[in-house]
Amino acid sequence: MAAGSCRRSSSRRCATGGPSSWHPTSVPDERWATERSERALLALLDDVLAQHAIDPTRVLVTGFSMGGRGTWYMATRHADLFTGVIVMATGPGEGSLESLSATPLYIIHSPEDEVVPYAPVEEFAVRLAARGCPIQMMRLPGANHSMMGDYIAPLRVAGQWLWSEWDARGSRDR
Image (cartoon, rainbow, N blue to C red):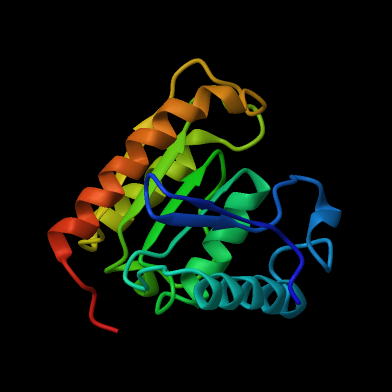
């Protein structure tokens, strides 16, 4: 059984799950990018998909800060499972850019983030766009790294964009 929680939303026909803490001990190995943490998150995803009527062509992975690092890690290693990616206040992933070439990706980041520099994130987004990746980047001026509340409205916008991308694509080939 994977550690984490799952919450079902009737309004958007979706489920959310996973660790919700930024603290390194919120994942089994104290880091996201380990086989043990990866197995735990994949087991949680399997549980959610088995227990709920989730459309497998609309599976989003998202994260903020260190959770964003986990998002990059999982999205690049499991592009076959995730059909959308939203990252907030985190640096570029270390995985293969090619694995993200067809996956809709939304990045939310602030130039005033004092923990994760903005310029490398913007450069990464430009590189992905040049490769034809369906990508949007929202610049969030005035928010420092710990101002998580400032990301709520942009996250809603990102979700609406992703939903539109999914609708435009219909079912994704698997």
